[in-house]
Length: 531
Image: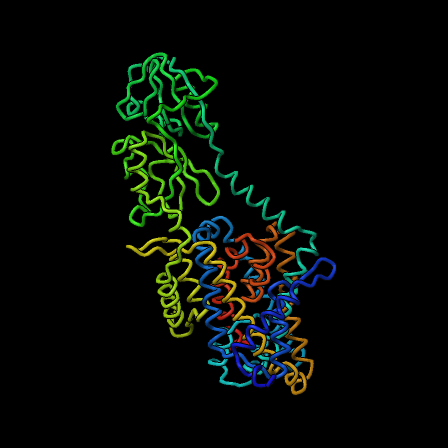
């Protein structure tokens, strides 16, 4: 009965996951394996003859990679512009050092070229690299060497990224908080202030003539003329003694004081028919439109004072493109605000709903893109493969955000659930597959190739960690994402993902992963010709 149950792949998958979570909660000197413990349980089950269908592992892989890409997409291109050169340099160091080590071992231990190339691709967990190696060498030795190096590579990368923060004495949670604080500091904190019109140059001019938003960066939310508080319009004329309440950064408010007059204490109250409300943008046809296009002041008599996005308050400039889930603070008369609420959607439930069409369509496009064969002359061709195709498409779609009525986004809870599900299925399949041949490869091939594969895995990561930390001064979260991306290790990224709630490692992984695939394929083709 027990044997029959283990041969049931669905039973085995969830048993492996359950035991993996139990093992993952065990801590030794404060260190635990978390979700990556699943792969160690799977290795044992694989050794005992349990197999998980490859299709189930691939299903999990595309779910995991797609959700990583969807989450990382909005920050990917910004990260590439700001840190891309440094992260790619570390990636080049990883791949180049692995290939140079392999070339040295070939001559030192008299190993044939197909075998050493198979060891390199296995040590870097690169299936696309193995495919190129097999195609170029036409030798089964490449596959055998890949199978010898791959199991240690999977385990070694997980253990390495688990121990690296402890080695450098870095608290990842504190690091994440520090980096989030730095990210927020790039966007000036917004505040409110009250001004009295005392500058003769401002008197008798309309707000549109003053061009306050462009001149100062502040937004006028309401005015007081005599005893009456009014909502601002473009044609509102400023007069001596008028009071203006405005929202903006400290610099913007200081500039406004120079433009209109003296700064005063307090704030203007709202009249009975006036209101301030926070509205959610959930209406698809408004997404990606610039705030100025909506002309809310003219059409509804309302003013947007702040826009909150991903925990950051943004100044509402006219050219700011609106995104799904933005929370806009709107000031105006209640009737106008209700109309703006209908325009924006303001439906909190829609934020948590999951539309499976973008997920399914995005994965379909990713799989198709992964099958493309991109040729650069007659000597070099490149195919993104399943992982690369899904990741690249997810990054692009997420950065675009919206195509017609389709939103290429996912709610945070849905993303987390699908990512965890995909990850667990992938780890269970990879582990059982590697565990099947783990012992036999030692018996047939001895420990030499296994040891060489382990060296090719570990030495480049050590070099990358030292250079990245002490020379390039990369923060630990970026470094972990870069190492796992440079090693093209999805299980490694999964281990990092379980160590922190920050998406910084995922963005770094997505930044370098495609580059690592291309560089490795170039090096493999070069090695076949040269050595």
